Image (tube, rainbow, N blue to C red; front, side, top):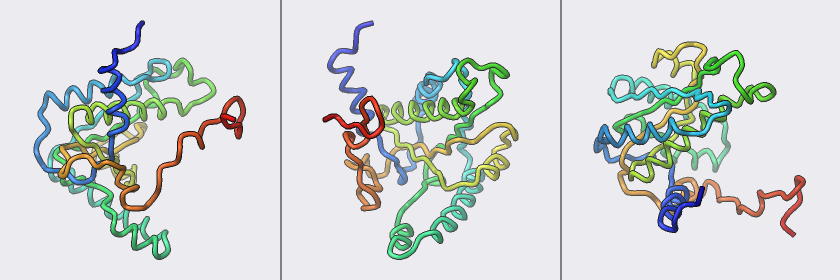
Length: 218
């Protein structure tokens, strides 16, 4: 199969490099057809053994969002106490979620029993189901960016409480809780945490090893 033409390739790379973790949303609704395309893109992620272990819990009602936001608030407060000054104050200034601001929340889950007991490729690496689910999250994120829709991944949560609020069966793993909607101020040029001085991007060359760990390009 031939590669994409120049304009098609540019679109793919633009989505990759312009993707951002969005935490401030305009509140404008995401059209149903747009959300459907984004979720379908997520479902077309690669998965080990073609296991497709993901499900998507779409949350739009305010009551459920508020319940999840309460969990996040407690988790963020607990995390803040783990820092010392001045990092603790820096942490307190960060906006770390937009659960109630976003018109749509999506909880992406992983079903480790789907296709069980014998899922091709999981004989020695059982966690491949989780890795595959993360690929669905990335597909969702990139498709959303191409649609001009922002996504924010909320990692400050207690999974067992999220499972309870959303009636997720006990054997299903909540992997990602995503806020989805149009950004309030557009997409920033740099990742938010880089803009805020929390952390800089590592250069690609520093992370590439040739043949053996620790072997650079020279």
